[in-house]
Image 1 (cartoon, protein in one colour):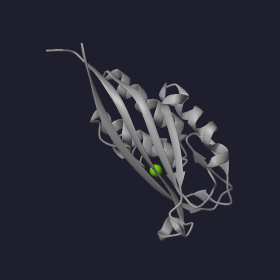
Image 2: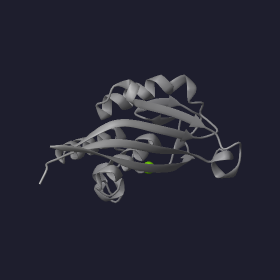
Image 3: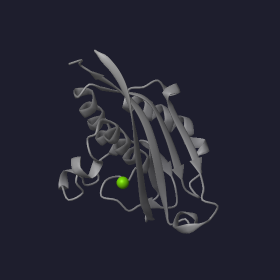
Length: 165
Ligand code: MG
């Protein structure tokens, strides 16, 4: 057995719509808007799923969970993340660490940072110390700066436990 490391990157954006909360990293965060989405619109988990799939060379979240498929309507994104982690594990990949950045003017992330970090760690099967969460605004520039939506970027490292030839 030889171990090689691979990096993956993911990004997701959702527009705000009507509602009273947003889901961020599997944590319900009270807000004066919800997000418009086919699933629960969890930008953190969607970005993280794409990062994990990217590291494993497994395409993207839309290929595995198409938004035209009624079974994913209103789906809890935590379920999608668990499925992605299972897919990686089945192919001999093991997440090493996760780094996520949320980009939004509001809601404020600080009060929820530890809850989100711990929930992501639980879902990915990592120690909380291996999951980092950052938050930034765009200084009121652009659509996100005008409060029209929320975005997240995620980077992961995975180890590939490949068999030697
Ligand atoms: Mg999404």
